[in-house]
Length: 295
Image 1 (spheres, rainbow, N blue to C red):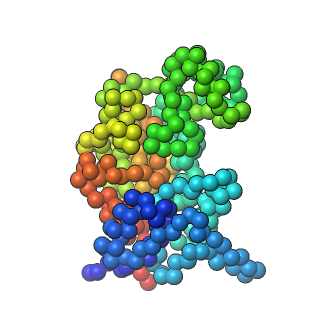
Image 2: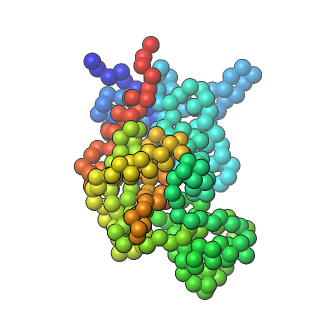
Image 3: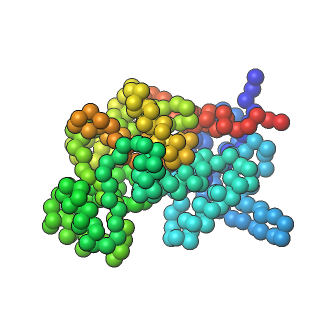
């Protein structure tokens, strides 16, 4: 039996590698695929209804978020609200707006992981310089400072001395929220579990640097995930409400696993290459399963 064709709208950078990969996979499975730049989202509101653009005219249509909205506060808030309104109008949106809001904010992600009983590195988030210094001390004087918003290992900074801490604070805007996590030594690298619905694909990332991101020069090798790894990754995705998630796990010296973060718009180029799996096709197949049956 032939699969019913879907009308897929891919929201993000039309020139981006992942959006192009999704378009290839979607078209290969017989779906109508189009790119939607974030700037084209719009709304017309009358006394009786709201009409969102771009519209999905087919009964079996879906939106895929492939990239985070950029810009100032007004741009980001409008774009995220527009995605939420697409959901409210009854469209399938992957990942949902609320899961994007949770996962983009490392503070909220970490808090949600703890709410769901998941192990995380010790963390301090503070705004005032004195509280940040106290947090650095509390975490043992060896921490990783991370941007609240960001991915790919960009903007991470390891702080191991009072001099480094003073230099770091001098470069921060006043009252900027600072996210600190205790540094956990990981000589064997860390783990990325890519969750796609009820399927999972895993790699181990290694690097000469403490940052193991492949985008920063790290290497990736395929990994057969243990039941514990799969359990943590699945529960982390559930904690953030994501159907597709990149869950980073950090093995500790005593054999434990910590959940570092959850990416709701994860890259998969390294996972595809290392595992020999067409992840874009896996994503399209997930959309097909999530779409209600016709009629």
